[in-house]
Image (cartoon, rainbow, N blue to C red; front, top):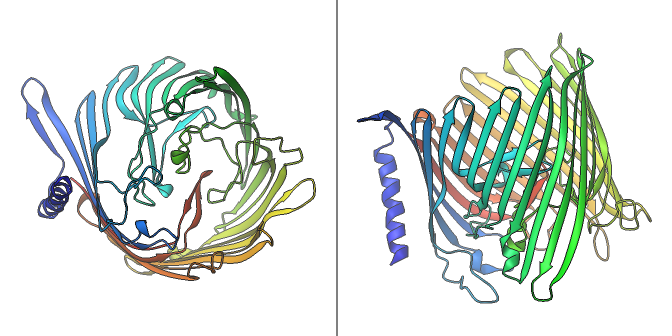
Length: 536
């Protein structure tokens, strides 16, 4: 009965969307209060997963109906908002929950996010859900990563104050994830990890800032196994944006202490970690440079719930030195640096860039310079050329290798090429073409595994309203069980007041997808998806 009601509610909601799509943001006059502004965003998503080419057929042939309703109400200096998520799964009769194998496709309705914010002259106070980050993310970073479908907030309270050159932020609450996981459509429980934190920053003049910060977290999932686990992270930083007139310096360090108490045996174990990060930026006319270095030891700050850890529920975001899209072998135990240079020729609108990165790492919380240590090196370069009339072209390529330091055994090596071309056609019409290719060898048993992987996308745009894209991907990494060639298409239409309609269908190759050091293993899949987001 519940499923029927939820299904009817979603269908009715979709009908209302289309009948009310010409609504707009509006104000309501409330006696003794004044004019109150309302902002509404309604998103309805349908996704049919035909197959993800694994050996589990219970998650194949599932139709997901997902609705997200955002409502924000504001009357200066107070604003409030709420997001209600509803999910219904159809054609999933094969998915049965058992003690050994739970079914994650369960119909779901919940107040996913909410907040109440009060702005005043010297600060802001928030109750409910909020994102936050301390410094460059070494101590704390609770955030949203759109590229991976991750959305983690703190549900509790935050107070930010500013008194002249002094700023402070105090937070407390429990962690709250987006429960409908965007890649697999599974419904996951919230980690309910509790935390308290504070950050203090003082400005010393000329933009120089000194900060100190700390967080203490209690892990809820560990208590279910008879353990009391907690982590404390504390650190400081200094930022000098104008050092000698042509350089900028940033330095941050932190210490971590993780304690695990077995309540049955009363045995306590403690792990200590440390992190140091620094960057030096240079601005020398047409030449800009960046030097970064990191030194991390046992610096792991992640939920104790292993099921959620696989989805990337990390509570900090230590800089990786890696390119945004790279697979990071390990950022908890790693030491090294990188240098990047970029040169711009203004007369010809040509930009050259190059990057060299190398660091030592280990994957099992051991010394990166010890017997289990390995070294990663990645070098790449490219150029971007802008032409008159809006034409542009960018080409880049590079080489990467990861090997054990003791015996030079291969972990992974590859070379890669990328290209992007923007072609204006006529008036508002344009064409964008992106292509990437990778040839890789990675460690395997008994023999190393060699494969190629690539992706080509072509997008026609009728600005500012319409985009039509085609996707062709190929990979031989799992050719023994998965198709090699993958074709898909996507249609995007931006209409009234920023509202969008998106339709996708086809097959994607999958693989490890990374964004800013956070990586998720996306299985290959054949699926169809439609999404409408209306902003009133």
